[in-house]
Length: 261
Ligand SMILES: [Zn+2]
Image (cartoon, rainbow, N blue to C red; front, side, top):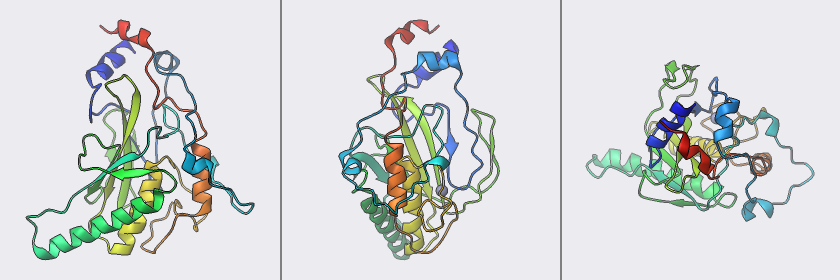
């Protein structure tokens, strides 16, 4: 475990890979477990203040959550605690041909609409630097083949062709444990499908790490090219998630720094 933390500290800045990569959206997810020794060296589990945007949201009687389907990460629920959440998305390539540039601009407009749709619930801001962003949305077809996670040895199968969300953890300059989300979003869909896929994947990136069994909901597990909006059930689930404990956004206990080799 000491070895683990020594490695961890080496990667304690910026957009570096650590461990605990997991993948949502139509994946058989196997998240690594946290053993007691390691857990003792990490920040304790705690709740963050519920964002005002969610605390003000009133739940109607008819709304049902699907919180039971949501999986916490090894470090707790994937909750953002600093707002606005910074989102980077691939910029159009000025060197591209006119037709390609048009498609890339359309992709960006669809992504921006998806960000705007979630922002009333979790405030987000678009930034131009992928390095410092919390969520990175890449204009790239996600891999579809069987993959072996090099850190955990877990084998994961993608059934999704159009969108994929992964996360990793890092320590920031202030020794706070943080996560970063990467969304890989296909450039090969039409405007409506791109927007719906972006909206669905952003739901994962904002913390809904699981799928609804109700096909009306945006976070239903099936992929669709239809226009699908955020439902009250999605928001109610998000609100419940943000009331859960997590180690993310919390400072490492200072005693652990003396244990490295
Ligand atoms: Zn999904």
